[in-house]
Each structure stands twice: as C-alpha cells, then as structure tokens.
Length: 144
Image 1 (spheres, helix red, strand yellow):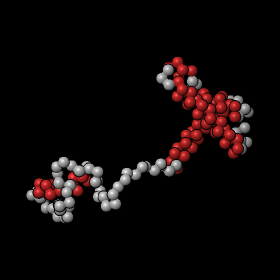
Image 2 (cartoon, one colour):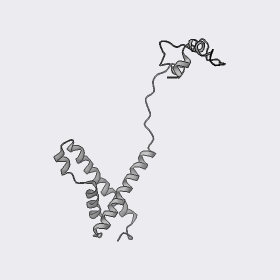
Image 3 (cartoon, helix red, strand yellow):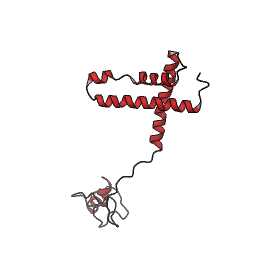
Image 4 (cartoon, one colour):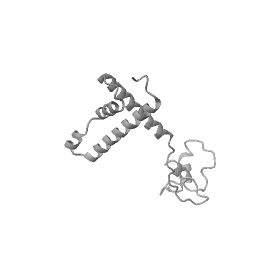
C-alpha cells in the first residue's frame, strides 16, 4: 500500500494532515486558559492519525497508521523549520543618522572622558596610541 504511494498522494497527505493540525492549533488558541475547553480539543497525535486514516483509506493497521502519522508530523516540522530558515529576516527600521556621526554617538557617559581614563591608567601600564586625544569619551562609549 505505501510502496505504491505517489508523490502527489504524499503531498496531499502532508497537506491534509497539516491543515488538520492547524485547525487543532486554532482550537487550542480559542480555548485559551479554559481547562474544560482545552480538554475537549483532541491530542495532536490523534488528529494526525485521523487525517492519515482519511488520506490513506487502504491503510488499516493501527500501528502502521501511528507510524505514518508520526513520519508525516516530522516531515511537517522539518518543512516548517526549513521554511523559517530560508525566509529572509524582515529588515529592521533604521534610525536616522547624521552623515558624519561617530560610533556609539547615542551614548555619552556623564564622567569618564578619554583623557581622564588615560591619566588614571598610564602609571600602571605603558599606553601608546591615539585614543587619549581630545576626542571626548570615545573609549568609555565603546566599552559600554
């Protein structure tokens, strides 16, 4: 029975089971926090098995139906994961910036300008470089 399953039949099996599971999930959402309503919603395994039974009427063995339903659910989860992975992320809104704005310009500490930091650590370690200039709090801003 399963050996003669065509690609079209397999696609239909996935579509039917996916739709049934989506309807079940909608019922769970509608039930909200009402425990009685949530208890009335059938388990996902049961919904998948019933969908497989309808899609494959020639398959009557209960154990085989459970196995096929589990494989279908796994294929649906993999499809969902692959789709989420392949879908490009939505572009994030950009903040308007001045053309010559420096890095971390949105943050400026009240105290801790570069010269103060340089004076504090220069007796402990030998410091070389341009960062201790009169540029303000460049080092403190980038350490945030």
